Figure 1 (cartoon, helix red, strand yellow):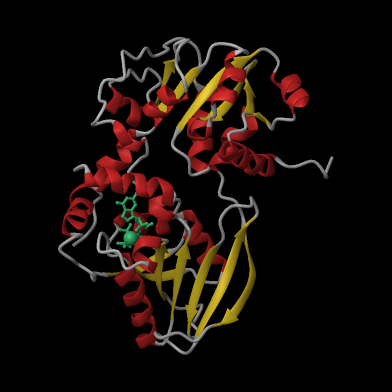
Figure 2 (spheres, rainbow, N blue to C red):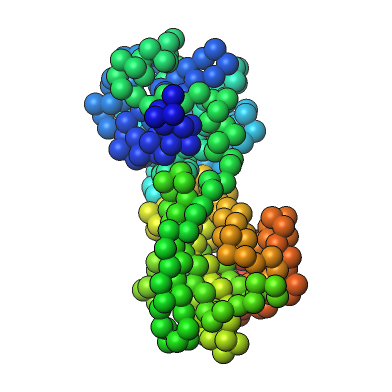
Length: 362
Ligand SMILES: Nc1nc2c(ncn2[C@@H]2O[C@H](COP(=O)(O)OP(=O)(O)OP(=O)(O)O)[C@@H](O)[C@H]2O)c(=O)[nH]1
Ligand SMILES: [Zn+2]
């Protein structure tokens, strides 16, 4: 039935549901479970969920490590939720904000038996909704009937798992001329993903030759650096220096990718900043929150460049992962153009950590 939402469209709905605290139904391998993001869970919903059965808390192995909980499933841990546990207990396990003030949260008992695929999908969904990567999972006997009865989004795992890995196709919505400080000959293109996710922007300077390597920059959104002039990172100066170099050369493309906080979203980045004020570095802070160092999908940048007609780039970056990803997406990187600007007393530690732990080139 062509009017029914596709699996990708249902995933987008599911992200909205999770952000509101509404459970979704995940089903696969003859099992089904209600899944809700801990960050948005209310006491009323928790009570209603517990009336349906025993709950398990799915956390990433990164978060479990800080909590000293066993992660029998490799990349994640399934924590048994005691009968007396309330929303505050669950939140404290999901959110590291008070870890140092209240380090003893256990003893935590992890589930060892049975598959973790529904839990894994729940965590992936919470991450993609830019919520803390923690999901409450309540097994139910008949997921499809329950979803129909309660009007919940129903997600079959065999379709969801591959869809979560796919890059949603993007298309250009519109473009317009934009004279800028860096160049009079600017044009902003808006690209929209078909899955209803965040739009991304391409800022084209001049009229770059599609047959020659283009001076290109993949810039990830940084509200604090780009807009507020934060001294904690180098994003704002990098943004302006990249545009200035394109202006001087007369041609280039800067992609402004809405992947705030290396893909974890602004709220989680601010949580990471609070942890950094407690003494953790940029990588440790991500891990304590349950994220990997870098959750960005650089395929988006390669896809947009290709759609604009480019096949080779001179890439402005210090990040070797961006170079590797461009190449693996079929874009030839003929040159890495270093972009070292904006060093401050406040970001020296941040830049040193990126060089030491994330392989950034100096
Ligand atoms: N999670 C997290 N994100 C941060 C932090 N500081 C900056 N960011 C984000 O990191 C991203 C910076 O991206 P880029 O400018 O592409 O930096 P990069 O990966 O170092 O690569 P190049 O600048 O190309 O060398 C932006 O999305 C920022 O919002 C932090 O401490 N934690
Ligand atoms: Zn920044």
